[in-house]
Length: 129
Image (cartoon, rainbow, N blue to C red; front, side, top):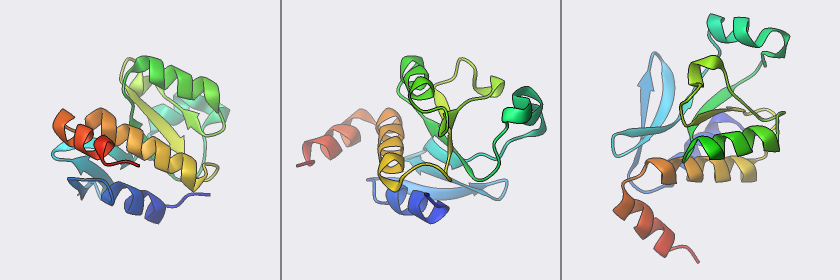
């Protein structure tokens, strides 16, 4: 089970990342671009999801493109989901309770890579072992 502190540590370990608050909810940005954020369900989300609406903490995360979003949705429906609000938008919703910290790390790094300026992302990838 992952926590908001895990999200914070992973996100802030990435280059050029900052934490901000919007509507009293944390969000993490690379330079000025949002890449992961706390995203509780709204009434319209709950209405659309019905009985399938999850409880617990939810992370919003950018993905590289819609095909990546669809792959995550098909990969693990217990962790990844979406709502009509995100239709056509390259972002996924992530339940923190069932995701492992290792998988969370992968989601956050991929969100960062999808959002970071190309030169910063390249420098980060070039320094990986």
